[in-house]
Length: 303
Image (tube, rainbow, N blue to C red; front, side, top):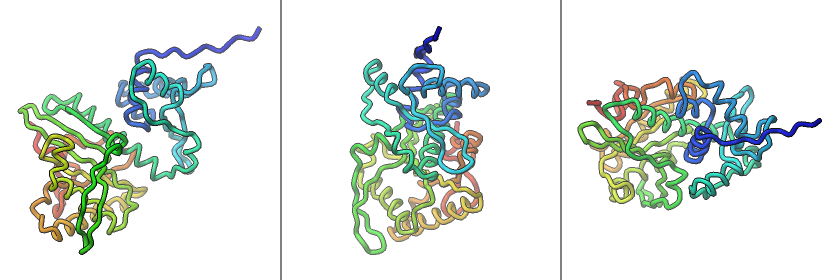
């Protein structure tokens, strides 16, 4: 007698996973474990993700779609919303799921593109975990680039004597509040090291003009901000070179615009996918400023 395969029943934890993937778009098992489980639950998380992505023992269209990180020797699996997960969130939860993933897109993904997406996920997950574990600072709000792309502000910049218009879409925006009531916001930018000097300078100039034009305050409701650039690379020596270049190019833009006193708004650090959850990104001195080799914190002294 042939036995029918069981149908997958979503429990509250599975619903939490779908909600998380809905926000972050791309997640690995480590990200889901860090966000929603205890440290020792990685094997259980992998099993749960396998079931949600249509494991062989279950009858289901994919709640999640699973693909492999591009590149040889990369065993890590990446998860995004599948068709059934999208339907569940829209019809059962009422979330406005206005995007969907086409499996045929995978063949066009470069390693750098997926690493950029995962790095963004990991920095934001790290921010949330930091806030949950801290008694001194709370994460009040966050927005991610997929949301910010819907209606991006456009600013006009002057660079090297040329006028041009650029869209300003940070990878993420974070709003923290200290226990003393003071607030600190961060514009997060994930640098893939693919932009040459002119493009990177235009990127920085766009953020500066975004702040100077009052559009930042109108968009996010606050004035103060820190602009945080992280960069990644296959080798530590490349990361260090890129880090130095970004700081130098940012300084040149500020000098050209006669805004050298804005230098302290910027922070820079290098990251790899393997180190994000090991570093005190939001609590320790792992960031560098323009013109200084002394590591500092991102949010300033924590009370």
